[in-house]
Length: 416
Image (cartoon, rainbow, N blue to C red; front, side, top):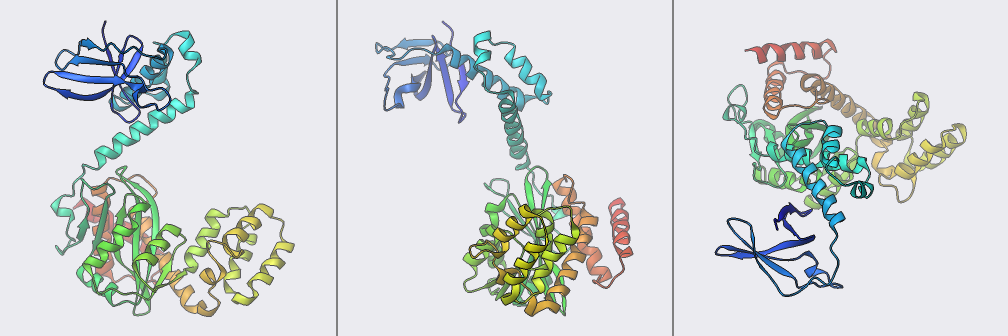
């Protein structure tokens, strides 16, 4: 009788023979050893074993131990469909509905009745296709031309490489690293994006230079678990960096990472990201109501509770109010009042918010971070934006029309 080879959920070999399933248990010379899949079940250890020929895959030995459990051909049939769906998902770009229909068509009527919901099978297809894309994306190497600025200065300072579990890329310049080293405070503006189905986070580091917040370092991260690696690599680049203040966005994992790696650092929220967080996360239709709550950042810390209670009585947005209270007001709120209130630093905080907003718009216009980008194209655009920033000495007093000029200059440079 022929054998059928499938894979377990962890992609290990699975052999099906006479209605029973076996997992691989090693090989020697021209034999492959298999043991019943239930051999590890503490409540139903089965000692049935078979051997197959390593070349022909034919069964050449069946142990005298009988299975002391019934076969489950229905379960194996469903398993076969899952394997087919997985292989089809990886092997071609067929429409998901067609792919599933073709696989199910091979099943018996009874097995179809026991299939999971179609939406769950669709998730399986999406998962394996995304996994394949990410695996292929990890093979992307960076060409030498993209490791330097347009002035041929070093630009790529760190790349964890295609073999790393979670890839991190750091881009900066020597003089910018000096500014970061000398600065006693720094800020990070985070953008969620999709670059080559690999990187999902784009960080821009800012420092206060001559009264203005300017970008000094760029980082591409595969995911948020890369934060510690990012800061450790920056500290290897500039070991004397010892900032006293981190002006944070509202990413708890990022805040925790900074606190772990910079002992004694003070972390406070930026007004720009406080307002952005409220607009995005606590979304309601009334801009007036949102602005009333955002204005709590300007009230003295001691008066915030009372001011919040007044707004709570005046406005009828219970869901919004409850969410705001849990996030910013309660004693155990993830972002307590002292974190986001700028009453005592109003002038500096608003100036920083203006600078960050300017540069944020600058990158949004120049990089179009809301679309999926090719890694090489993204790095090329970063080089160009770095060049324009340096050459034109853009500042936050420039008119809005400069942003259109930036995009125009980018297009001209890209055509060269």
